[in-house]
Amino acid sequence: MPKLAAFPKAFMQQLCKDGTMKIADWIALASTLDIQGLEWYAGFLEMEDKTKWPEFRKMVQDTGKVIPMMCCSPDFTHPDRAFRENEIRKQKHWIDMTYILGGSYCRVLSGQKRPALSIEEGVKLASESIQECLPYAQERGITLILENHYKDDFWEYPEFAQKMEVFSLLVNKIHHPNFGVNYDPSNTFLAGEDPLELLYKVSERVVTMHASDRYLKYGTIEDLRNEEGGALGYAKRLSHGEIGQGMNDYDAIFTELKRVGFDSWISIEDGVDGMDQLERSVAFLKKKIAYYWPEK
Image (cartoon, rainbow, N blue to C red):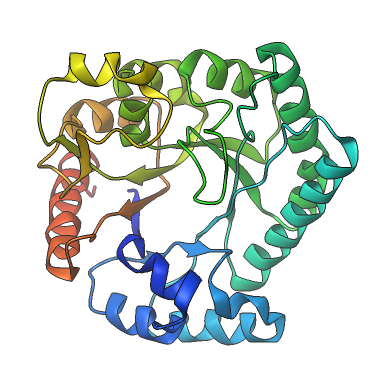
């Protein structure tokens, strides 16, 4: 049966920028949720002090939860080899972070979709960089998870592999026991594409999932698909919402994941409107998981 984790989507500014929330505060808030884990973010301000990492692991474990997944954003599509080598070093640092926190999954991305970058060159640079990190991850029992991502907060350009055609090319370029896909259905809407179409292409490679939901504030899904090709800037007509209340078809998603034998972590990216919303999303997902993965 899949397990649930939560990500502090509503508190990223406080945890990563202005420091008005401490990691201990988030752990305390999340301790009341009926979930098994907390997804971590490499950019939490307090993570700069490596000596605190074992302490954070213990704080989470003391609430009866674990840290299964690490969220980080390497940029492997830069044309300069020295830049990419530095990103590989950073990724190995995040793998160490995941290992010390007791996690099993560490995110990787392709990199930025720079204007002069061809699809062929981008896939080559990203796949080679990820494959350079895989032996290091394997030694530590960590699986690298490639997310169909939109754009890191600190990036100038969107994700190189945002479109499913490019994402599928990259996924199919890498075959390793410590590599898989972190599927995020909502990010597919930002690419102006169908989340289920992407899932059917990569479902057998999915090892973790981000659960989120989006809804249209105005207009139609066709309007969204016609808006800037779905790539540049967050679509203004699309907003984060409570899971089960938006455009994602969780029955179809879970039917396919069950079909391919998925039995791993689902991390909730929600709660932007408060912890009550996050609790309702947890309840929705628990009910769906119990239906699709009934206990024997």
